[in-house]
Length: 125
Image (cartoon, rainbow, N blue to C red; front, side, top):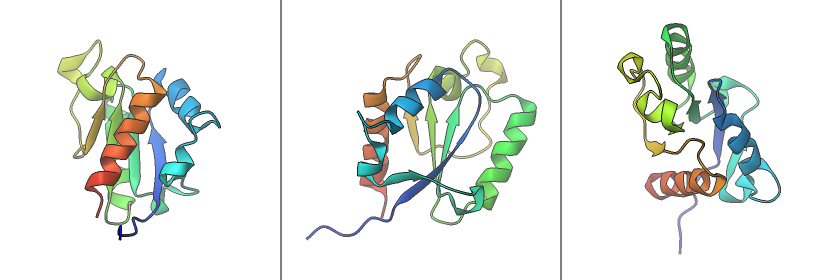
């Protein structure tokens, strides 16, 4: 018998073109909710932080605030080349939070994002 895995409530941070593919992943064609991943109404109730795009200094501070406000257990997923490796400015890219899953691609396909969620669900206890 499989053990019950709690729902992943996510909040997205960042401004980039990866947002379009995330929205496709939420749509009825891919249906992210069937994997137990739903949007959080408030940042303080999210246990999954999705980082999209390169993090500049000001955004890095905000990401750290979101991460500290999240309840445990907390997970972080970076999607897109900019969030995973800095994109055009890799020397300026420093993650202020530990990342559990990297989904690369520019832009990442919705299937790749869903595979990232599935990988996260496998390590989730």
